[in-house]
Length: 82
Image (cartoon, rainbow, N blue to C red):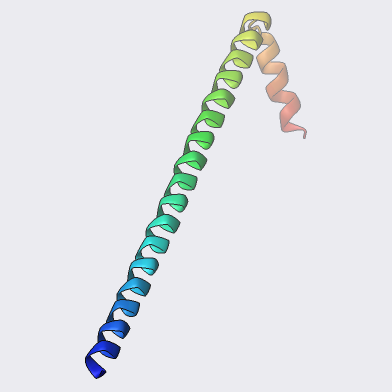
């Protein structure tokens, strides 16, 4: 009878270990997938932000005329007083 009890206990322990392993693997897979999605979203956001910044800089550079040397000197003098 002890052999049957021991076998049942061993089977129960093995089932618990298997359940724990499956739970850990599932949790790790979910966490890894979440990290991958978060990284992809962050990368996409950075790319869009960079593209918007570049487009904005292009528009500003295209519309804003270059200051003359005289205007640059005047701006430098004004900034000294601040």
